Structures are given as structure tokens and as C-alpha cells.
Image 1 (tube, rainbow, N blue to C red):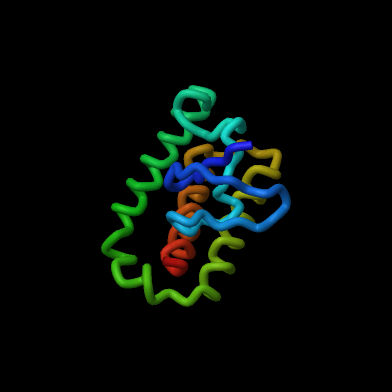
Image 2: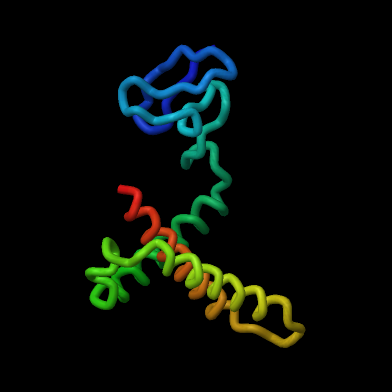
Amino acid sequence: MPFECVRCGEYLDKDSGAPYQCPKCKAFDSFVRCKSRKIMNKENFDATTYYMLKDFMGKMFDVLEEKFEKYRDSWKTIPIGELRPKINEQIQIISDIISTDIDWDREQVKRKLLHIANYCFFLYSKLE
């Protein structure tokens, strides 16, 4: 069965069950998908979800721009150990807000989710 690398589009021959690395871009198994399996793209992705994701990414970018001066040098210097408690703190705040019976501000929760996404970006930048 033909496989395709999600990153570079290279067609691959893959034995089932064996770990595999794309020879072109060096992506591992998690990035290799069966050609017959749907890959997330605009054409086969639910339109509502696609635009919601696009909106989320736009808002996340806005927060990154807004906080750029504050975090200008932090992207590469922040210790990974500091990110975990910050992510946990944001998740705890969101859980507390949503689990209470009182009315809660959806925009505040969305903002907290954007902060979590930004912390994830910090972690991602550490891997590059």
C-alpha cells in the first residue's frame, strides 16, 4: 500500500509495523500516513472546524505580536522547567472557571487558551 510523507509529499514503501523514517525529509512514523487515509486539509476538513482553527491561529498570532516585546529574548532563554507550572496554572484557572456554577467570561477562557498555546510555542521553539 503506498504511503506519503505528510511533510514533504514523498511517496514511500513501508513494511507494516516497522519504524520508518522518510529518506527525503527525515520525518518519523508519526508523520507518515497511508495514502488512502484522509490527511487534514481544507478540502476534506469540516469547513466550520477549519475556519475555527484558522480564527484561533489568527488570535494566537495577535497575542504573540502583542507580547513580543515582553518575551523578545525569552523564546530561547526561558528554562523548560518554568513552562510546565505556567501551563498547569492556566489549565487550573480554566478548569476552575468552567467548573463553577456562576456565569463565566468566555473571552477570558479563550485568552487563557491562547496563553497555553503560546507556552506550547515556547516549548516548540526549544526543540528547533
